[in-house]
Image: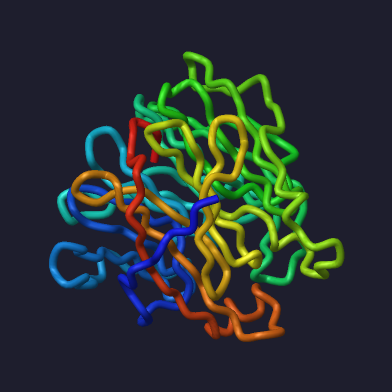
Length: 302
């Protein structure tokens, strides 16, 4: 197993980072409890700028084929489209959303897949079964997967025919077949981190998967929350690399000028404190680092 050395991109100034995306030379990131989406110019001394403020907290976001950014507003279950510096309502999901807007991925046809977390955990609800929603190109909404226990990481493989979905509190990574019309079938458990998790963790599942992405070789990078590391699984599900961090390993994405920079989002939580309570109280701190990798970004999405 190979261990990689990190470079600090951002050492503070954000509360809880999520959903990093690299696009046209900039790193985009949601500061969930800070209620802003930022860009970070990694070519210009990592200069950070506010892109948009989101009163009901941003979370998942992704770029559409036309280059516009679709970002979520968690608490009121709305998606917005940002293009040419202007935001407009893209889809109102409040009539179908049972929890919060979670992670997001957009396929090559412009269909938006977004987690419905199934519970409002920052408002005191216990984790329960959520769903995966799809906003079609005509902006109609479909439920494409159900009974996902706190759905989280979302990404589509290099072929565009498989979708991966992590269930954080069920400790598994699922894989689906994507049909021509965007609906999903053939659900299977592709990998479980059960062998990594301490027998008596007492953390209600937060040792499990949060975010992830796929590289050009078809290997998968996963962030392992309170396990405090990022791991890379090859197509045979073997762990080939790991990156240790100090804090909750939350999300990752590939980018940089040659696609071979892996950006890592870690959120520090006060020792002994519940993650969700710390988030609500803004007692978390986001750290962004990067590592150089041999296999870079392919055609996987986001």
